[in-house]
Image (tube, rainbow, N blue to C red; front, side, top):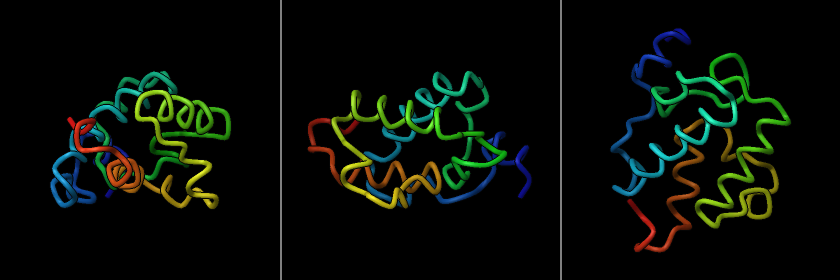
Length: 108
């Protein structure tokens, strides 16, 4: 799969494969990624897209901004709960991590 496929919404991890609330979390994460990276195409990245590297282009600064936004929006302190930050591997792993920690009323 090329980065163009991922940006166009090509298949990665299935969006519906996790809890139903993950799709709402994915949508909000895409919006957050668009803001912190300044890249409009973040709105259509596939769930299996790597957050660091060429596809999304997060670096240490934008990664930190993402974590601040996630904590503000979802109330999940990713850095405190995942010391190795393994959940930042892909959009789907981050959405699943957040989804597992959201109270049912916060799910969209």
